[in-house]
Length: 431
Image 1 (cartoon, helix red, strand yellow):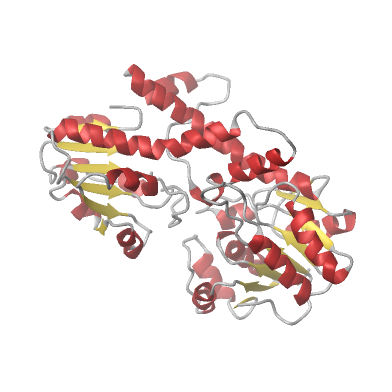
Image 2: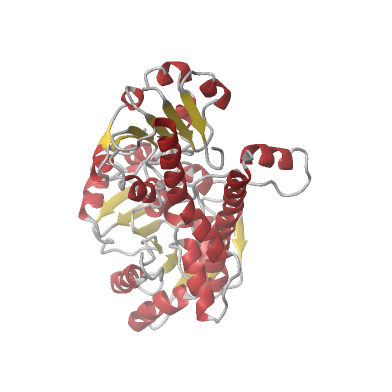
């Protein structure tokens, strides 16, 4: 394997492109969005991911090439990394982008090129959507499914540390995929089919969603019982030789917010209704709105009147650690649906999300210092580690009294906050 094409240069595609270029391959990345191509071709990453900017500086126009289409030259492999969104209304996967990419590959390269599906797809989609496009032009195909399983903020490191799952249309396809991904990974996990590889990715993410949902279940129950959910979780986990309970918190991102629906669609096609997957996803999607409503209740209790309150929202990306600027599945979006029902003055801060993005959500961007100046309430939404470094006494001294601090991830010391006169502290499940 010497020359590899990457179709789709989002989070999955650009990280894989840089990683393969670092290993000495000639990589040809393409994307159908002109702004993405223009930015990357100029060496400007369109996403935040540690190591991408450095990789572009080191390899762009040498080992790494970016364009709007694949080159008119032989390639050993082409990896499909296009988006596979779910419809916001029906929750059904939209695979037209994948189908279009497969058709373009079929007309752009030949049947000796290995085609790898890297996108997250319903079980059976590689065979039912991609393969027919290749067969219609070539009459034969080399096809593999090798799902992406990295976490944003650590993707380049994990590409070289995590085992790579490989499933092939046949042994020859799987063996070629093993050759490609063994250049990156310390271990290849060979599974029996395209469908098995597709299922592994979905199971990984649905299991994560399910684990996190139980922490949120504990928090919602503890809130009604007037107990501290973190006290319960810490006590339950301490030196107990069973799986740990997860702490409560928001669950979003491009994968966890859609992959459960993709697996549900896969199950529906074979007449099975999963017991847990849909319930876990609904609970995790319920939490941001619940927190926003609880925040308003506490704000009304604190200052008697919600209208006109100056509220600072800290953390707009879907997560704070590892840091990212990704807004897909961000809890702030459904929270704003609730908060906008009141006449609040909303200020917003994030360490990586651009001020223009915050402004487009109807929130006034501000610095971290400005977030506390004269505010009636602060809502810390993500667990970015720099929020933990706040000088609590200094920051809260600049808020109006009485004040509310709702710290979703308990980054601040509750004891320190409570010792400050006129400030009320709350968190998920803790009022």
